[in-house]
Image (cartoon, rainbow, N blue to C red; front, side):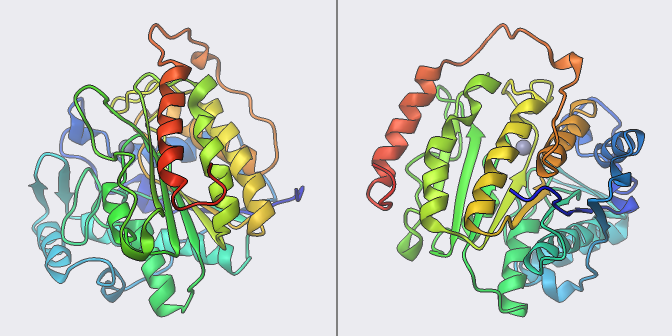
Amino acid sequence: MPKNNKIGIVVDDDFASKNIPPYPHPIFLSYETPLRIKSILTHFENRKIFDNENIIKLKPKLIDESIINLAHTKYHIDSIKNLSNLGSGFLGEEIYITKDTFLLAKKAIGGTIQAIESVINQDVNQSFALIRPPGHHALREKASGFCIFNNIANSIIFLREKLNYKKKIAIIDIDSHFGDGLVQYFYDDPNVLYFSIHEFDFVEGEIGFINELGEGDGLGKSINFPIPMHCTDDIFLEFMDILEPLLNEFCPDLIIIAAGFDMHFSDPIGNCSLTSNSYFKFTKRILKISNDICMGKLVFVLEGGYNLIALPFCVHAVINALLNEEYEPPTFENIEFLEKCKIEDITKIKNSLKNLLANYWISIQ
Ligand SMILES: [Zn+2]
């Protein structure tokens, strides 16, 4: 494993100051706030993380509207633009619009493209796009769940259509919620592996079932690993028993992490019970795999994560793992949880998923 990885971090002051939710707190719409990025940047500045010579600050790539049009309908783009020009508005219960929404959402795509291009061009070894609004719920024709445009899908389509990058890509979505927008872009695509780990309500039902495996040439390449509520650090990484052989067999040229941190126990929206240490351990595992199969080409793109105290530690944990440094979790995470899901519950899901995937993957038996 290389000792001195260069880590690119995409930052821009606009992400930390613009598109302020209409209500300060405590309703749902208030959670996707510039304070999410501001809290991360403040934490990094206090700990002099940007002074590390292996950290390279990157700016979002400037893009024009035609790039958004690669992944979204003209109508969707126009409606976001028109509402932004008006200066306010709502799209359902999960999307607020301000005068800054269109430009900031465009910049979030540019930030994601910059993070990916820097890694593909090997200007840096790995990267992290600290962007917002998030993207993995956004659909071609509609915003959804705080997400205006689909940052990762849009970036991949841009790479393929404008930069002629046709290699295989693996997306690992660790946000607490299923990436129902992101999965749809590549459902029939044999060259994009989408693997989602998400909380799942096994009683009431949810989105992101294990038997939604893709279609046509993409069959077997969309993989859902639903986990029960109250999942804790000790059993979270059980999904690696499936993901690791799949990545080795698929052998992508690039791994993109849809990095939501709303499985943290303090998150106001997520229902899992992780600490930041899970994100440290996950990153170490995935970095090792990426070093083995794709020259360490690994990109993190921020999705969810809404507790302003916990989010900076989760991102810090990822950066430390990428830097091959140790990580000391904060003392407020020393908690004995009252409810925990059982290892048997996860083993059952793992075995059911293995049975399904054995039809498509040699490495899964
Ligand atoms: Zn989420």
